[in-house]
Amino acid sequence: MPTTVLIADDDTVSRGLIRMVLEYDGCRCLEAEDGTATLSVLGKHQIDLLILDYMMPKLTGLEVLQTLYQSSHLEPLPTIMITGMLQPSIREMAIQLGVFAILEKPYDLGELRALVAHIGTTDKSSEPEGLLTSFQKPASFR
Image (cartoon, rainbow, N blue to C red; front, side):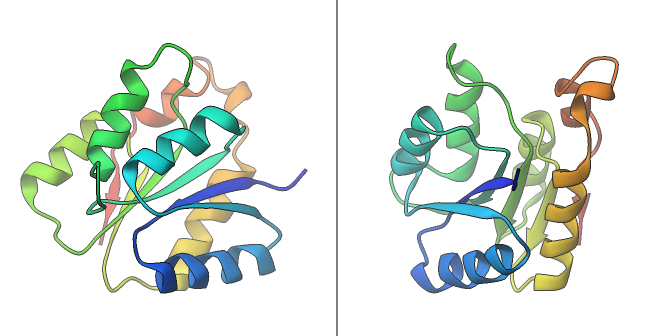
């Protein structure tokens, strides 16, 4: 079964480019253009991976994750955050919220593809603490 990826970015061109590359790699992709739409899609679909822009209208990427963690019906999921402004405070909050990796714009699509492939092939059920174990690992940064 293909990995289902939600691409949350307010930039239509960026979303389209990521979608094109990941669909070529065999992923099923859904899109959201702002933080509120991201939460709506997460509530309606089973998502395996979230690619989340930090700076979006309505809710930032970090606010989306905070809301996700506070929601009783939405479970944490592997997240790759994309940002054009990687400040130490953003980095620390992302780590606390369990972000798997942060890519700083402009990022390399090959690196994004490698991260998606890694996350999509990792069997979370084989880890002793399940999915949460992956959220306790430090995020990687460029």
